[in-house]
Structures are given as C-alpha cells and as structure tokens.
Amino acid sequence: MAQTAVVVGTQWGDEGKGKITDYLASKANYVVRYQGGNNAGHTIEFNNEQFKLKLIPSGVFRAEKIILGNGMVINPESLIEEIKYLNDRNVSTNHIRISNRAHVILPYHLEIDALQEELRQDQKVGTTKKGIGPAYTDKYARTGIRMGEFIDKETFAEKLKYQIDEKNVLLSKYNKPINTFEEVFNKYNQYADYIRPFVTDTSYEIDEALQQGKKILFEGAQGVMLDIDHGTYPYVTSSNPSAAGATVGAGIGPTKIDEVVGVVKAYSTRVGEGALPTELKNELGDYIRKVGREYGTVTGRARRVGWFDGVIVSHTRRVSGLTGLSINLLDVLTNIETLKLCVAYELDGEVIHFVPSTIKEFERCKPVYIEMPGWTENITQVKHFEDLPLNAQNYVRKIEEITKVPVVIISVGPDREQTMILKEIL
Ligand code: IMP
Image 1 (cartoon, rainbow, N blue to C red):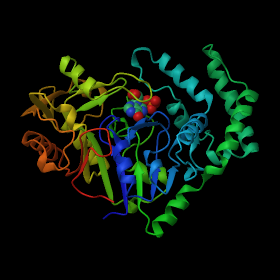
Image 2: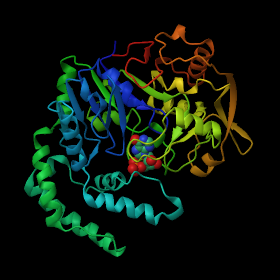
Image 3: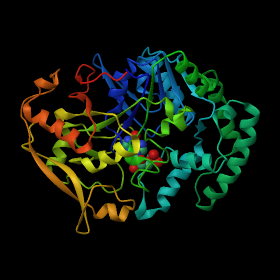
Image 4: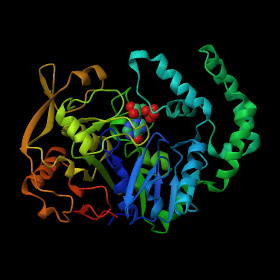
C-alpha cells in the first residue's frame, strides 16, 4: 500500500471530495491541503451530524496532524471562525499546522475581487468573492504578505502600510470604500495573536513525517477544470488544484507522490460561469439537482448539472496522472431510464477527444454521447460492487473504459457507511 496519495476533484469542484478525504484520512497520519482558500466548501456527515468546512481539510476529524500548506491563501478571520466552530462542537484543533509561507487574505483583496467582477461586466468569472484571485495576484507580484510575516508585528505593519496605500489608489478611483491602516492593523493583529501558535515550517514537518514512514494524504480543493493552467481559463480559480500542485503547494518533491485519486461525480456539475458541454437545461437537470442536493456550500448557488463527460475526466487523468477514480453520487442516477455519457466532442464538424485551450472553441464543442440503460433499484445501502444492479455495474465499468482509470471507491450516499472500497489506497 502507498505511503502518500493526492486527492483531486476531476471536474469543476464539488465532487464530494470531503467525504472521500475523510475516509482516506482515517488511513493517513497527516492530511495536507495545498492550494486555494475559503472559496472551497466541503460537507462531511457522520453519526447523523453534518459539518461544513471551507479552509480546514476534512481530515481534521481523524488525522494526527492537519496541515494548511504554503500554496494556500488564508483569510485569518475565516480561519478563526472555523477553528471556533469546530471547538464549539468538541472537535480538537490542536493538531492544525499552518505554513509560514502561505499567503494572507486581507480585506482589500475581497473588495478588489468584487470590483474586478463588476468591471468585467458580461465577462464575469463568477468568483466566490472571497479575495482569492487578488491574493494570488499579490503573491505573484511579490507584494503579498505571508503567514510568517503576518505573525511578526513589525513586518506586518511595514508591509500592510504599503499595501493599503497601493490598494486605496485603485479602490478610491472607483469610489469604493477604502481601508485605513489603523483599522485593519488593529483588527488583524489580534487575529495574528490567535493564529501564531499554529504557524510553522510545514514542509519541514512533512519531510520528517515521510522519513518516519508516516502516511500522508494531500487534499486538493476545487477541481482540475478550475486549475489556472489546465482548467477552462479564464473561468477558473487562481491556483493549481491538479495533483502537481501538491508538490509546490506542500513543499515536497514529485518523487514523493505514490497515488493520485480522482474524485468524480457520476454526472457533471459546475457553479459560476463558463461552458459545460453536457449541461442539462431541462426537467431532468432539475431532477438531478434536487436529488443530488446540488447547491454550493460557500455561496448557496444552484449548481448547473450535466451528463458525465468522459473528455473532461480523461483530460484530468492526463494532467493529474490519476491512478484511481472515486465515483460519487452514483445513487442520484437511480430511476433515470436512459443514461448518457459523453465520449468525445464535435468541434466545427470534427470529432475531438481533448479539451480545446480557448473558451470560444470549448463553447462550440457539442458532446458525442453513448447511451446506457439505467436502473430503478435503491442502491443506497449496497456494500459490495457485485451487489449493485447490473446496469449500475455496467455504468461504472463504462466510466473506467472511457477514462482508462480503475475505479477504486464508489459512494452511494452522504454517510461514511455508504461507501464501497474496491481497492485500499493507503
Ligand atoms: P474564485 O476561486 O473565488 O476566484 O472563483 C473562480 C471560479 O472558481 C468561480 O467559477 C467559482 O465558482 C469557482 N470555484 C471556486 N471554488 C470553488 C469550489 O470549491 N467549488 C466549485 N467551484 C469553485
């Protein structure tokens, strides 16, 4: 069995990674998140309790140590809120470590995120307005504030002063509320005091753990189609959810990754703008949305729904090097007479098997489908693959065939118990 594994979303996020990470975390010593911030949202259910998390990996309930890696952008207010939320529900957070190289989201990032969306008019990305893009912009412009600097009062003051002046030029130009240094500093310095004990060199800790033979799970947020390089640019997030992001975003070398598990819905969903070739804008789409409870954890927005798209998941296999698939929400497809799976696109009269790089071409892609008969049996309590109705088994096997990735986990309901393990990973 593997020592390390990365879990990635293979579509546009919301594949139900939280539940799978929670399961794999039970086998891991450490769980590490390597990108994104509180734009993500995951829901975990067990013992009839439901937890909603944004920043903290779902492994928090089980793992020995939880790491928020250097590739993340962290909103201190949101982090503290989440820590308190967990503590109030008797979940310990003493095992959380935050990278001193992770970047801090400050109030002006949220204001600029909203402003940029407003200025884009009919080309909006549909961001979560959590300041993610502007925080990563500062990181790459080399003006961002890192956790290690944030918890050092003097450095934080120096850098913040410069940042506030710079950001106010932009915000005042568009008559947006501006921040004063004192206001932000006083508030955020208190947050820094709270967070300080959690901050450390997490890459060092991970390396030590690896040397001790500990098992490590790397958790990607969002999905590969939202990856800044390999997603449907510009309708993407500003980080690298793909598996390769785990190495840079956690501070480990690529040689340290053994397995990559891609989490996939038995159909497709997407929030925000951007093309979704297999979208179902009809009653069947509404039905799947309702049965699958397809509403965003962070923004509450209704997710757009479509058939399973094999071109997308094959793209993810390629750019993330998937070694196994976890199929989620298979139960949602029960009672649909005929199921469709997209196996290629037709683009300007030509059949293609890849995702075009430009949005304009992607928008013109028409799905090429195969059809399969559905099933009517309730599968929510099925524990073994062989006990699934034959048509459900065939549907799963077809996904394997299209994507060329073996299925290792099947989920048929939100609870921990409603999971079939076809192959142990960690
Ligand atoms: P941002 O990450 O807030 O900048 O948003 C960029 C795009 O990524 C938007 O289309 C969001 O809806 C989408 N997005 C960001 N985080 C998630 C997520 O966790 N699940 C699904 N979509 C997301």
